[in-house]
Image (cartoon, rainbow, N blue to C red; front, side):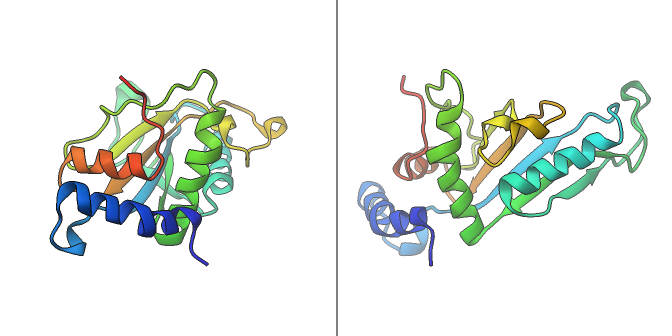
Length: 180
């Protein structure tokens, strides 16, 4: 069974985008291709910090994260080569739509004093990146078992060629942008 947000994309978003931007071909209509959730962990923390971050990211996304390691040593940051510095998960297809649905309908409204995300965080190629300062806003995380507060970056990658069409896509999908 397809995700609820995917059915909304097919039935409502595609016709609206086709009509608004006058796309001649169905393949010109923008869509989400992947969502990347990245959690950076300070290299100076104890060894268990990386395991805790990976466990939290597994609970949030439902997928096992890939551990990112440093490429070179930087003495000023007390960083050695091949030292674990973060973890990330790439979600595609059904898992991506399920995560997006949970993010929009459950997680983002749980942020205190939430008035929407800035529509100015696009990268110029139709990809939107925003940061979350605390993993406790996700309902999958149990507050009693958390040892440290950990933030994360979430990137929504679309195949839109420009920011305006990607903004229209995400607005029609129900993404909560702040009004001017």
